[in-house]
Image (cartoon, rainbow, N blue to C red; front, side, top):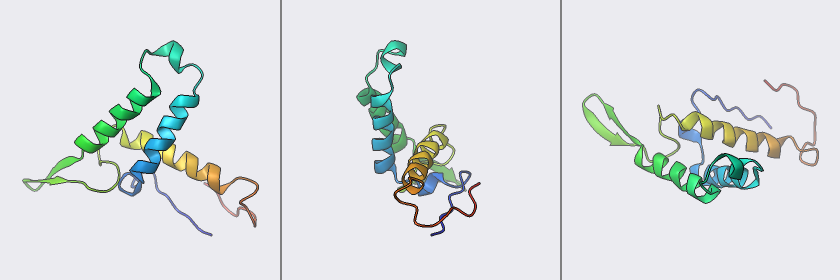
Length: 107
């Protein structure tokens, strides 16, 4: 199996609904979150969803467009979501149970 994800161009290929769940799960299992902020993981995840849905408009050659798939390009949250997405993908791909052969190259 060969899979390639380039983080520079990944934002439009992120499965957002899946990644929202990954973010919520990571926030929910974090032990120090309650000590650092008063917001609950649910509220932070809702803010992420809001920013991704409402921040997906862009201007190209004088026309306004709405991006309908993936994370918005040039959003400050898009690289963060790309990291959450790829980390989960790596966890699933490189568990001992799922590897039937050996990893030839991982970069």
